Length: 334
Image (tube, rainbow, N blue to C red; front, side, top):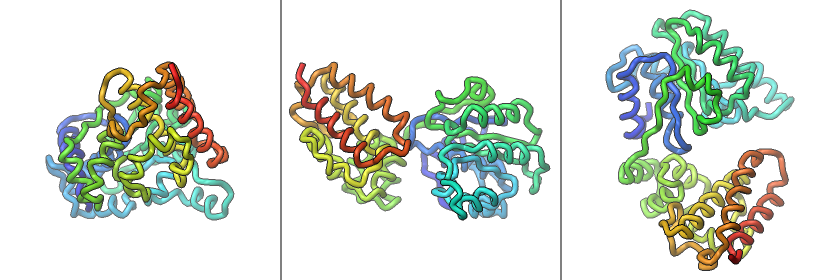
């Protein structure tokens, strides 16, 4: 069993010492909501649990590790289940194999109905049952209401752990049925040591952690996307020149996230604060005289774009449009 990151293990111990049948783990991306949810599920189902969590060696822990525990129901979008190596239901896998549809990016109602049926069954190993939902904000209203009914009247041996990177999008009634836990941020040294243990070049670890806003899992994802700290550092000035090539190979979602970080830093500098995601030396000189109104307008446009960024637009044209708008805002005049 792979050891949890130190800050995740510490939070798991804290939550395991408390009582409650449903937890909502919330916070921004990159802090380990999924990892913490899995640690809780593993400990709740473990044959020999301790105050530190699951033992990691019993048949139950092994079953979780190989994604085959009969008392663990995982609710995720199919895209994420495939990414994390969780098996899909037989019918869903057959539909994908026959190319009848693409993997869903939402938690499907059919999967939630399977979870309701799972909740009504008897525990197979006698340690209770767990429903893990991640990312919980990927439920639509029908799916969320189906879960709500089960949350309101849970079986005595059933526990829930919902992990979310946008808990504000969940139904208020759903949030009210859960004990809330806001994810803790690791210390910088702790995060850097963890990144290096994951194989990140020590020279890149600090710049990448900065690029991720201090969120280690986001920094790790960035390092695994075939980009490095140098590519991040040249981004602001390249965008000021309108160089669309700087985003070659980026998905629209990745590009919008990077542009939001740059816009944040430019507004911070305009307000007299220090940049968070980029070094001050990396920011284009033209930005110091950019129109505050233009930058705030750009920020609003990017926030609106986030809501549609996963729609099937032409990615190349979308990136060119994003770069053109970035150049306009950065070089704007008061």
